Image (cartoon, rainbow, N blue to C red; front, side, top):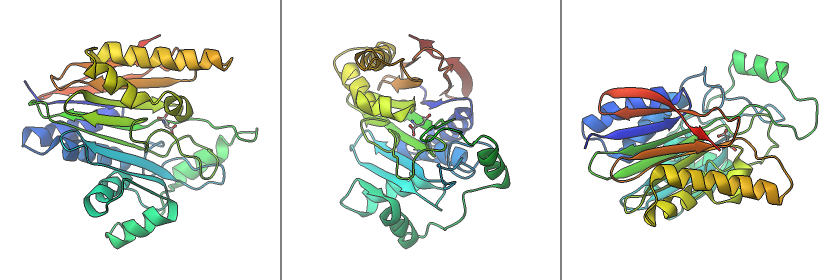
Amino acid sequence: MEPVVIATWPFGRTAVEVAAKLLASGTLPVDAALAGAQAVEDDPKVNSVGFGGIGNSIGTVALDACVMDGKTLDCGSVAGVENIRHVAALAKKVYEKTPHIMLVGKGAEWFGIQNGFPLETLLTPESVAEWVKNRPKKKNETKGHDTVTVLANDGKGRLGGVCTTSGLSYKMPGRVGDSPLIGAGLYVDDEAGAAGATGVGEEIIRIGGALFIVEQMRAGKSPQEACELAVKRVIAAAVRRGQHPARVAFLAMNPKGAIGAAATQGTDFKYAVARGEKVEMLQAKEL
Ligand code: ASP
C-alpha cells in the first residue's frame, strides 16, 4: 500500500503535499504530519492556524495543538500559547522531554523558550485589520474558525497525527477547544486507526469525538461509518440540549489506509487526500 495522508480544509492540501513527500522518503508518520501542519502554521494567509491567526476577544492570538504517535501512543499537547508559532512542534517536545502530556499558557511558553522556540508576535497587519473589521457586536460571540488536522499512514499501518489551531476567533481569553485535547480533537492508535476533528470545539469535546471514532474502528466499523456515527452523536447531543447542531466535521483513517469523513449540515467540509504522489480534494458527507 502507498502512504496516505489526509488533512482538514482546502489549506490541508499544503499539509498533505509536504507530509506525503516526507513519508515517501521514510520519515515517520508523526513527523511527516507535523511538518505538514507546520507549513500551514507558517502561512499568514491561513487566519485560523499559527502565524496570522485571528485574535481572541482582547486581540491576543492564543494557539492550541496536539500530536500523537500511533505506534507508541506517545502524545503531547499545548493550549493557550501566545507568541510561539510552531505549537505542534512544541506539543511534541512535551512528550519527548517531560513525563507529562499537556502544558498550558505561561508554563507552555516557558517550556518553549527553554527549548529554543523563538518568541514573536503572531499578529500580522492583515489579521489585525480583519479582527477590527469583523469584531462581533455581542458579548461572548465568536466568529470564524478552522483547524488543520493531519493524519498520516506510512503505507505499512504506522499512523501519526497532528492538530493545530488558533481556535474560535474572538473566543474568551482562556477558552480552550477540542484541538489540543487528546481524545477530542485527535486520537491515533496503530491497532485501531486515527481520527481528528474540526469545527465548534465545545460540541466535539461533549461527545469525546476522536477517541469515539477510533473505538468504533477498533470494533470493526469503517472510517466512514465511524465518522458518521460521531456526527450522529453530535446531532443527538444538540437535540437533548434543545439546540441546532453546530458546525462540526470529523475525518478518520484506518491502518489499511481506508479513509472517511462526515460533517453536520452546512459545514461544507472539504479535506485533502494524498495517496503516494496523487493529491485530491474531497467533500465530506453531511448528515
Ligand atoms: N475546533 C476548533 C476549536 O474549537 C476550531 C475549528 O476547528 O474550527 O477551537
